[in-house]
Image (cartoon, rainbow, N blue to C red; front, side, top):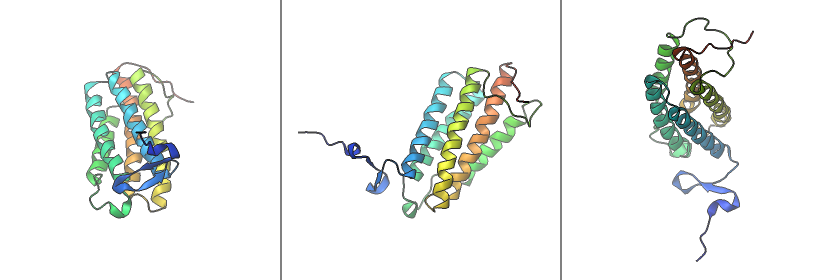
Length: 177
């Protein structure tokens, strides 16, 4: 018996058996979240400082819950897994790490340095791409505001973590004039 590969026609299933085209914005966001989670896994494999690794592990868990939420059609999302406390945690971690970074703070830095920091900068750009798709979906009433806001806050945290890792590991950042 020939196995049926339902994706061969360019469609996939999301929660509740809803079938959508693979080019659908929801599938695009799901893929970007999966990519971000995998990239954070790569960062963790590079052995970041322990405090950073713990934050990244929690971000990965949050991204799994995020993916579950957005794979559920909004009209059926009665108990979202992403909540205000997730946003508050990311904001608090960003503030805590930001306070540990020495001057200069409000500058543009080249996304380089320690390999862990460089990969965190890369993860930040993937997160920003996901945020752009989430913005489109939010403005089309397809996802909740918390789903948009959380990605904005995660990208901030990834930026601050990259700078923190460079500082912790004694890597001088390259500042853009």
